[in-house]
Image (cartoon, rainbow, N blue to C red; front, top):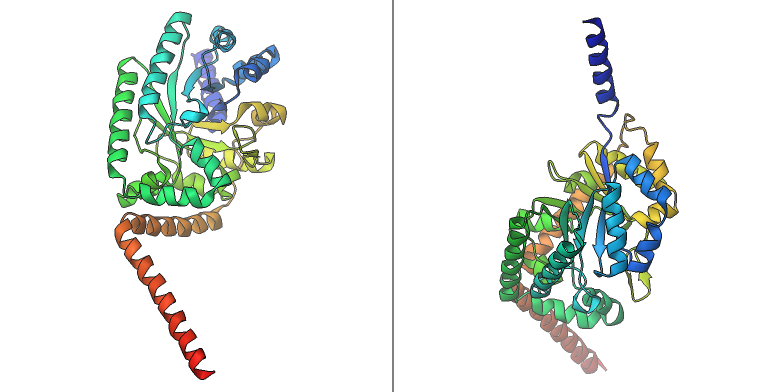
Length: 357
């Protein structure tokens, strides 16, 4: 009886000691060669196993070299999720206009998985703007602005894109996969106001999956207030970026320091038991994995009330803009009226100046 009581107390102590420690996962978006080089390090694999970390693997290709490394990860027992990607010329991420290509990509993934007996904990779909739009934003921003403006009227493509992706996700689930999505945080503002302007403007689709993971990257938004405001109940959250990822027209995502990543991890750990970090390779290079292991999750999270209040104001502005953009014809009339008023005013002013002289 006494021995059983001691064991029970030890179990309770063990559970309490680790109650605040979340499970971690890392995104890895490397091309095949660098991907294989990263996981050729047996010490890294051992560390991931020890930390019980899972990996979301960006699948650029289904090459034999990548296959061997994934089989190695399967053998090591590291949980992996297939993060499906397209060639850059096809948009890279999944969006409103490349649904048919995504369907073909999944068919290729299924064949490759079956042929090589690969094991996946799920499938991830990344709902972001077309890679070609991102390149255009840098090289010809006015051209992109006109392209985005015309999209505000394109309800057909949005409905068609959603239908294709809903069918694809249903197929994935019927095949036995848990499907998760990586989404832009402001999509929740779109849902709140029941608009579609953000989707049309960026060419993305809002499709609900089994697991929704908002990309609350403070390296991009520069405000930790986005973490509690965009975290969804009983869902994971993604933090970052520690560096890496795709390079667009020579420009790479801004990376965050360890102090800011630790701050974000502590904030998120009070909200969810599952944290995803972008990305693995730079976290390894910067020694962040070892530091994550030593975080004291019993410490109080940082006070970010000021940041939350600031983000709430920003969210209110975003909602207002989304509502306006949801009525593009009225917006166009208002802009034209303003332009005409300004031109007419300048004309009258010029005429008055000429008469005076």
